[in-house]
Image (cartoon, rainbow, N blue to C red; front, side):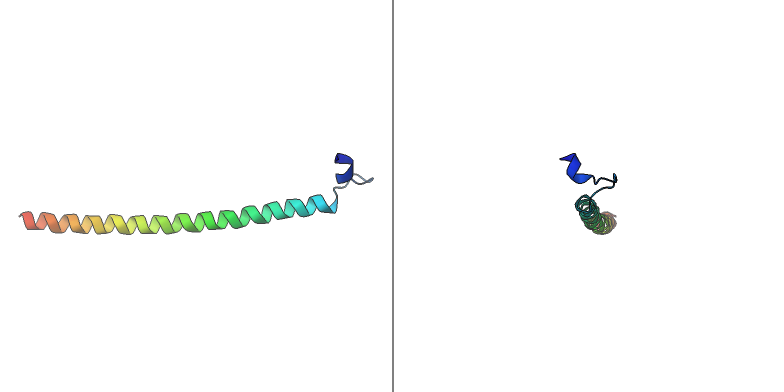
Length: 64
Protein backbone atom coordinates (compact mmCIF):
# COMPACT_ATOMS: atom_id res chain seq x y z
CA UNK A 1 0.00 0.00 0.00
CA UNK A 2 2.87 2.36 0.75
CA UNK A 3 4.13 1.86 -2.79
CA UNK A 4 0.91 3.44 -4.09
CA UNK A 5 1.41 6.52 -1.91
CA UNK A 6 4.94 7.12 -3.12
CA UNK A 7 5.84 7.75 -6.73
CA UNK A 8 9.05 6.53 -8.34
CA UNK A 9 10.69 9.87 -7.51
CA UNK A 10 9.90 9.51 -3.79
CA UNK A 11 7.25 12.24 -3.73
CA UNK A 12 3.93 11.84 -1.97
CA UNK A 13 1.02 11.20 -4.25
CA UNK A 14 -1.65 13.81 -4.92
CA UNK A 15 -4.32 11.73 -3.17
CA UNK A 16 -2.36 11.67 0.06
CA UNK A 17 -1.79 15.41 -0.16
CA UNK A 18 -5.49 16.04 -0.69
CA UNK A 19 -6.33 13.81 2.25
CA UNK A 20 -3.97 15.77 4.48
CA UNK A 21 -5.46 19.05 3.23
CA UNK A 22 -8.96 17.82 4.06
CA UNK A 23 -7.85 16.81 7.56
CA UNK A 24 -6.26 20.21 8.21
CA UNK A 25 -9.29 22.11 6.89
CA UNK A 26 -11.66 19.98 8.97
CA UNK A 27 -9.60 20.49 12.12
CA UNK A 28 -9.50 24.23 11.50
CA UNK A 29 -13.28 24.44 11.14
CA UNK A 30 -13.88 22.36 14.27
CA UNK A 31 -11.37 24.45 16.22
CA UNK A 32 -13.05 27.68 15.16
CA UNK A 33 -16.46 26.51 16.36
CA UNK A 34 -15.01 25.20 19.64
CA UNK A 35 -13.34 28.55 20.36
CA UNK A 36 -16.42 30.56 19.41
CA UNK A 37 -18.68 28.43 21.63
CA UNK A 38 -16.20 28.70 24.52
CA UNK A 39 -16.21 32.50 24.22
CA UNK A 40 -20.03 32.54 24.19
CA UNK A 41 -20.16 30.35 27.30
CA UNK A 42 -17.63 32.60 29.05
CA UNK A 43 -19.72 35.69 28.31
CA UNK A 44 -22.94 34.08 29.48
CA UNK A 45 -21.31 32.84 32.69
CA UNK A 46 -19.98 36.32 33.50
CA UNK A 47 -23.48 37.73 32.96
CA UNK A 48 -24.94 35.10 35.30
CA UNK A 49 -22.39 35.94 37.98
CA UNK A 50 -23.16 39.65 37.67
CA UNK A 51 -26.93 39.03 37.94
CA UNK A 52 -26.44 36.82 41.00
CA UNK A 53 -24.27 39.47 42.62
CA UNK A 54 -26.87 42.18 41.98
CA UNK A 55 -29.66 40.04 43.46
CA UNK A 56 -27.54 39.25 46.50
CA UNK A 57 -26.72 42.92 47.10
CA UNK A 58 -30.40 43.89 46.81
CA UNK A 59 -31.33 41.18 49.33
CA UNK A 60 -28.63 42.36 51.73
CA UNK A 61 -29.84 45.97 51.50
CA UNK A 62 -33.34 44.83 52.55
CA UNK A 63 -31.89 43.17 55.66
CA UNK A 64 -30.55 46.49 56.99
